[in-house]
Image 1 (cartoon, rainbow, N blue to C red):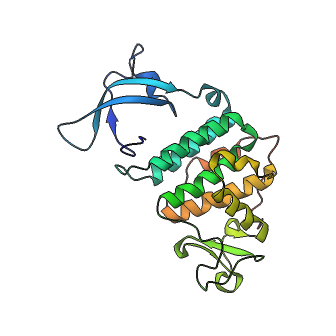
Image 2: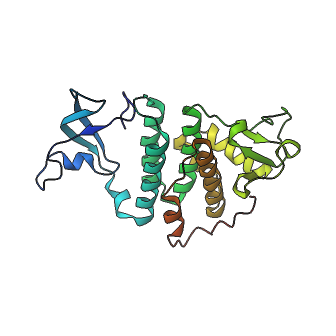
Image 3: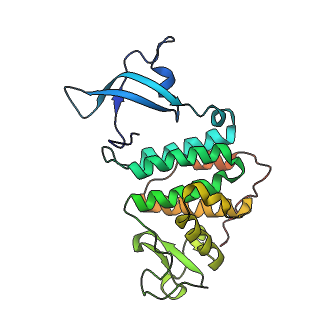
Length: 237
């Protein structure tokens, strides 16, 4: 993933060799600079030089953080088209990784906020203030998030739906705050661990249904034992 060209394919010769100088720069979620040159055929690039800027080593020592990195990779690889620059999203990934390092207790909350920005930057912004169908205000009301309608529907228009996409008025307020605050400041929201888990699962299910791509790493992440996070029970939150 690059800031200038978006997601691109590149080939690095000899990178699997034990003494390869390129290998450290190509490690999982390592921020690096690259020298790329166009191939004679196809839409891929050749990689000739690379330099590590930030390897985020602390994140790669924590099993739950590694699982979250895999989940983030699942989102970027599965839902981000190739060859489309997304500089705001690229900067968002930087902010997310920094936030995960400095606020490990709020990692799920930060990822939920990133997913909301990912949807907006990808052309799928969520309507969270008024019903996406009838236009009635959603203030103080329960709502159903419906991807093909572009956001939240009021009880009259929404009816029933997947439990994770049914949200309470308080949860609607959290989602709006997560979207409004800069990513570096979403930790100011005082969500409990169970509330952050519920918000994350809601945003991820909305993402999966929007792009029609299941996140294969989500079940593995949820299977990890945790001391601080209560298990999500699929009830409206």
